[in-house]
Amino acid sequence: MSKLFWQSLLAVPAALGAAVAVSGSAIAAEAASTVQVSNFNQDSIQLAQITSVSELTDVLPSDWAFQALQSLVENYGCIQGYPDRTFRGQRSMTRFEFAAGLNACLDVIATLIAQGGFGTEDLATIRRLQEEFQAELATLRGRVDALEAETATLRAQQFSTTTKLNAQVDMHVITPFDILEPETSTSVAARARLNFDTSFTGNDLLRVRLQGGEGNAIDGLNGLANTADGGYNLDVTNLYYSFPLGNRITLTASARGLANDDWVVSTIVPFDGPSVLGAGAPAFYGFGGTTGNGAGLGINFALTDNIFFDAGYTASNPGATDPSIGIFAASSQSYIAQLSFLSDGFLDAAVAYLRNDLVGNQAPVPGGVGGGTDTFAGLLNLDFGGFFVAGHGAWSSFEGGDTFSWNAGLGFNDFLAEGAQLGIYGGELPSVTDAKPFFVEGYYQIPFNQFLTITPALIYGNTNAPGVDDTTGFWGAIRATFRF
Image (cartoon, rainbow, N blue to C red; front, side, top):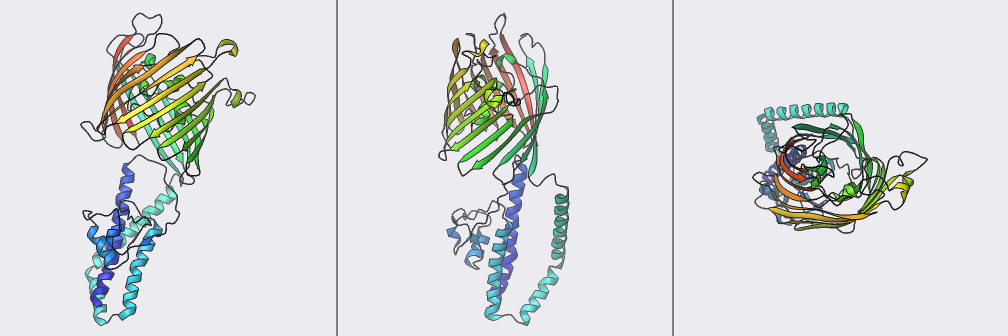
């Protein structure tokens, strides 16, 4: 009995050490990732007792802690799994789960003591072990005291218990290789964003975004993707609250900042984000919708795990802020509905409809008669693993005409470096005239670490601006993106 008792006693620190190691690795992984709103849900989960490590479906013999788990489960019976028979060894544990595991191991020790007790030899062994590991115990005690002091300091000085600050800064250098008025020399453009993300339940999000920037280029081709005007004056550009309604519905109420493609779960084409040119995002969203300066309301409905229906309404200023007009009589209103299929594999696709009170992005028709734009679009992405082929097509109809816009291209994921993306795409932008701008961009997005991404790009395009002799340009650009 004495040998079995000591083996059980020694199993306790082994279990605690494994728990701390798993928790520490999870915390390190979280610190290295992009900051997100924490999950504050602490609902209890009833753990299930297991009798063999083979019952744990996510534990393999090749795992570094397999033998330790096998011993704790099969020899001492003091490790529990989740009801779905998983151990989830890569995630951090809650204090409740720690207490449950510790209690199970202590129960084993209590049973052994009750069955036979221990004598003077056992007491002598305890004293010898205490003396032998006295230095190690003192070191551990000091570390625990230091951690408690650091935790107390963090709690006293923390910014907020519910809010996290995350930021993104984009800096561009753009050089025209062709002299195309008015862009005849190298220029710089930059944008800074500070997001205050708050969660009260762990599943909702209140975002307040402060943004400032200056500069742009290639205006005739929808400009650069990550820029902002305003002389670097900070402004509240996002103010909205998103919350779940049941398991499959999410509602979003926006006072400022959301419009058009902000209401949809995905714009499908992978160029939207990595591209330096703004045309990497499907242009029909901006052509068939108002700006996000006003108020809006959106809904996201997950019909299944892969099929989503999105709808949104935006009323641009002044109607959103002038009580004599109201949001439903604003001079500029837009509606969007999109049905998306998002898989974890080969196919992503969507169809969308937009209605806007403007003609394209132009002023309403004089007299308010016949104004507005209707847009019907389809989007597709085929992911072959190492590379993807994607694009979209959109037909927009307005008073006095219609226009067809599109973009298409391919890209290579993890090209020469993990997380890098090489892409080339082209297309035509929507226009209220017969002359539509045409563009081609090649970019290479290189993540140097979790904080810095560099994206060089070559851009060619024809703005087809009316009344201008030379409308063809060729640009080189490089963007540095900092996230923290």
